[in-house]
Length: 258
Image (cartoon, rainbow, N blue to C red):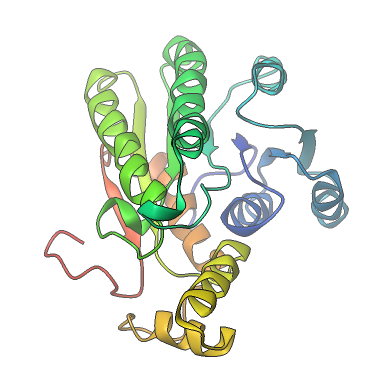
C-alpha cells in the first residue's frame, strides 16, 4: 500500500529509542524527512548514520521551550505534515512509593509540556490547513497497570485533551489521535520487570513471564510493529479518523472498547 508519505516532513519526539525510534525509522524508509528529537545525542547519531538523507537531528528535551523553539524553526522551512508527541514516562511505583514532589513533576513530564507544544504547533497546521498529531501514551489510559500510579492517573488527561481538541480543529485538515501501547520490548518495560521482581522477590525473567501472561498474543510486542500503525495515522489516508485512542496491546485490555 502506498501511504503517500514520500517527501513529507515530520517531527518525532523520543526518537533515540523505543517507539519514537521505530517510527522515525519507518518514516525514513517511506522516504520522509524527519526531525528526530532526543536528549541522547549518541542514539540520534546512530539513527542518522542509518538514514543520512532522511534524518535531521535535534538534541534536547522536547519539554523545554528552547528545544521547541528549534522544532518550530525547522517546521517553518517547509510544510510540516505531522508530529509524533512522545517522550519517556514517569517512574514506576504505587501510591505509597510516590511523594507529592513526584506528582508535581509527573504533571510537568506527562501533561503540561504536551499542551504547550500542541498550542505552538496548531497555528502552523491551521495556516496550511493540514496536519497530523499523534500522541504516544500507554495502555494505562484504558486499563491501569500495576505499580504505575502516575501513568494511570495522569496519562488519561491527554486522552481527554486530544479528544476535545480533535473536535475543535475538525474541518481544518487536522487530525488528533492517541496510540496507547501495551507491553512491548522496550527499556521502559525492563524497568517494570525489575520493579516487579523486587516487590515480589522473584527473578526478572519470572517477572517478565508474569507480564506476558496477561497477553492474548505472545511474545510481547515490538516497537516496529506499532510503528506501522503510527505511519497510517500520520498519512493522508487517515483523513476520516480523529479523536481516537487506539491500543496496540496484544489483547491485553479486557474492556469492550479496548
